[in-house]
Each structure stands twice: as C-alpha cells, then as structure tokens.
Image (cartoon, rainbow, N blue to C red; front, side):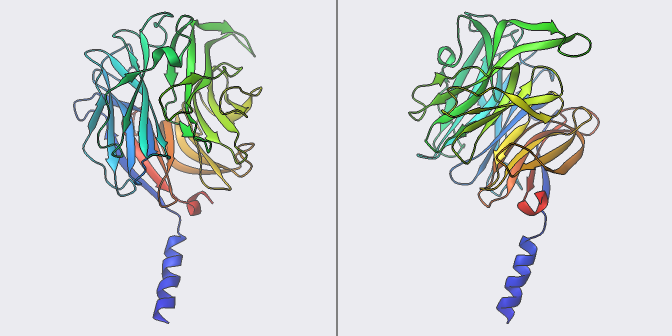
Length: 368
C-alpha cells in the first residue's frame, strides 16, 4: 500500500508543468562587455554545452570589436554551470562568431562550427575572393571538456570567388538519421542590400540566401547545397518524420519567416512558403518527440515576449503557444535533454537587450 501511494505521488509530481530559468552568461562579467548569439547542444554523455560570443569591447557584431567564442558545461540538466571556457580566441580585434554545434551520434564526437572575421570586417564589408570572413571547425571527444585544434573549411563552405561572406546558424545544426551532419548557413553576395518595394513604401532588403553545408563522412569533407529561393539569412533545420529536412529561415524583410523542404538531405530545396510571423530575429526549431516539433522566438511586439510554439503536423502549423518570458528577448537555440525535457538558451533583457544569456528548461506538461 505504501509503495502504491509513493508511486502515485511520484507520478503526480512528474506530471507537473516545469519551467526553470538559470542565467548562464552575464554581460559585464568575465572581462566581456557583452555576451550574444547563444547555441546549445546535448553531448553524448547527457551533459549540456552552452556557447556564446564573448564580445570584449562593445556589443556590436563582427567588425566592431574583439570577439571570442566561449562556452560553459552543465552536468545537472542546466541547474548549475561550469566556469567559462574560451573555445576560440582568433586574435586581437578578430571576431569568432555564430556558434553552430552538432553531435555525431555514431561516435560521440561533438563538433562546433563557427565563423572568424578579420579585424574591421563584418557581413557588410567582407568581399569575395578574400579571407575577410572564414569558416572553422573544432571537435571534442570528451563531451566539450576540451577541443581540438581549429580547422579551416572556408573554401568548402562558400562560393569563395563570388560571395563575400557566409554565416552559420547560429545553432540549429543536425545529424539526420542517414548519418549526414548538416550545418545551416547563409551566403552574402557582393551587393549586400537593395531598396525594394514588395508592399507599401520602399524598404531596405538584405540580399542573403540560406543553404546547407553537409558531411557524409563524419566531418572529413564538406559539401554545399543549393540556395533557398528567397531572401533568407539566419536559419535552423529539423528532420521530419519522413526523413525530409525542414529549414526555418529568418526573412530578408517583412514579418514572416521562410520555410522550405529538402528531400535529399539539404542538397536541394522546395519552393519556399511563409513561416511563422515574427520580427526579424534568429529563432530555434527542434524535434521534441515523435509527435511534436517545438519553435522558440519573440512573439513581440519587436524583440519581446519569448514563446514556445508546438507543431503536431510536422511543421505545417504551430498551433499551441506558451509564454516563457514576458520581457525583452531576442535570439534563442533549443536542445532536448537526456531526461526528455527541453532546454532553450536565449538572450534576455530586463532594461536593455542582451543583458543575460539564460537557460530555460521545460517539459511536455508545460507546453501542453
């Protein structure tokens, strides 16, 4: 009888909605002016590795100051986090940006792909045929405790002679069931932006295009897929139940993201369709379980009110919405934890943007 009562109580507790917040990176600490651009991955041993850009001089994007790639680890589902680790310090006034991690489930190797930028060069200033912008890889065989030497894949990852820059993710890389590792990317052409009038008054439109970089040999070689046929930039990917790959990409302008489907692992893409209505920002998408995809982003207005939305039809619609935080919120990345809960690493503000990068853990009962 006592056992039955205990089991009943345990089941009752397990069914309670879970929502836990923990600040992982705090701007103004550790010698950094700001932390931005979160990415998170669950390692093969169940530990969490959280990445960010440590911006030493100011909060501006690459080209405006010294930026390191930093990380922290958690072995208790995000309740506590390790000391800060510098994964890549590319040099004085250089920038390391756009952390995009992926786990190779076949061997437990954890990869981190990221960009480097020469001093003074960002997305707008980088030029074709130069190394103003670069793509690098590192890997870890001890679940993120230590990292390999950096490896340059710049010429494999973008059309070097014809595009000025690419940026990865941030976050959102996946390994498909086939074993293919797929990195979300976007490419900048020499003309960075144009004035266009798709509706109403003229507005500035970013001329960038999303695509995939992929490897079928556990990271030894990398290939590029075709560009998504819409003005798109920061993006993430998820594998659907039928093995197709869905890309969810930030819009060049307007108030809707873009969705496209690949039936060949990111090599080619369907005609794009409108995605979630959201301000132009980096959002996250992840498979929660066999029945659900989840998506996080700021519901607005603008970069405010972080929500999680749930799809039960493989990304056709996101019908359920729950508020994670009502204040200032911007970029986010998702990971599934070893206990079946989900975690989102996101940019949080109280009185201004990017004051914290916060980890929030929630369960199925919360989203339902």
